[in-house]
Length: 274
Image (cartoon, rainbow, N blue to C red; front, top):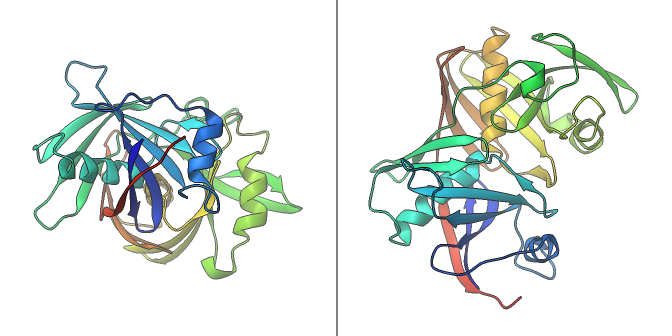
């Protein structure tokens, strides 16, 4: 099987052309590929497939390092766009991809950055999903012996966002791991720890479900910006500083899609026998 190792701000991926190769992967094989000691090593594995909709160019599938399939990955979407152009699968500057969370529109600019239309955020608890009776800007839970307040939103995948004074001191591993699997989130949740620096800039660390903390999380950056804007902490254009680098997030408010812009890098090409 041929693959490409890629990353978006250090959030790394094994990307596979499943159009020109016949690919069937088990959960065990995905876990092996993701293993950094015995396999290739990645946070997520991405499959490029033929579209299922008449108006789409491709289908985009995402598997976490634990082998489970998920519906959304923003950094992966940027790498997906770079991959299909680099491989000659499309010569378009903008194209549409099917995902299990709906369609995404991906655009490449002349400077090599990729902008992803991440779709319209969902705030209702049943759409996140979050087991709360009513929608709120802040929810409460007891986690790891602490009383937490968090915002929640779906970007095609569930996110909880906790405001902290200093991300370097945030309890990402302990609180992130326990909130990820909390009973309030029946499909588990990605947990963001957000430090507000100004109305235009935040710092963020994300504990991703099925992958633990990563150097960058695109959908997590979008979710943090949305939660911050909803709470009137941020303006509509936000620079999100992640351990792996910066993303630009734009959101005009309820009913509008979130736009995410950032880099996507190919590291190397490989071939592996499973």
